[in-house]
Length: 270
Image (cartoon, rainbow, N blue to C red):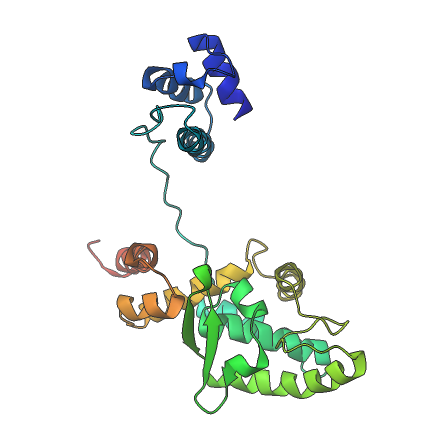
């Protein structure tokens, strides 16, 4: 915002106390200047959004009559295909945590649950014991915007959770912490998203896998593998908790690209 204000003062002769003098032509000139400076599309979009929001605030306060940034949009963002792991690679990762230690059991349950239900890491760390129904194989998940959904858990994830919860009960008693969180740290408190990222980094290194992988990669892998095996995109949208189908459709690009690669490798006249 500071850069935008300095630019507008310089080009439009605007003082900080007189933002009403700024018009759409001045903002368009600022947008052109950002392009000239070779800023990335993402940076330009953020700065335009900040400027638009600032004038929206001034309009609510009665400082300006209109928003000169309305109608001006930043550059169209490039769509990056999500990074995901193959089924074989993911199996290697899931088998990396040791099964003979309490924290190893916890970490295996974490990875299995992330992949089995396609959870965001915040949804995983927010799980409470009462949210998991082992009889139905479902977990109540609180997603973005506090929207709740039922997430199915596969047999490997349920088995890993049961083994961990046996140790978790002992750990909770020993640490004297009254918490209903499914996943605890070594002090008996609810595990954080950052801690999940750190433990994943450890197992990626042990398994010799791509260090770009994040907890969200398991969610990407979940969606990609479902579509690869013929799942309906509407069902995948529901499982991921996406409000818009457009958000889910990026995974169809991933699967289409893989089909094209297979075609070019296998077809004699491709």
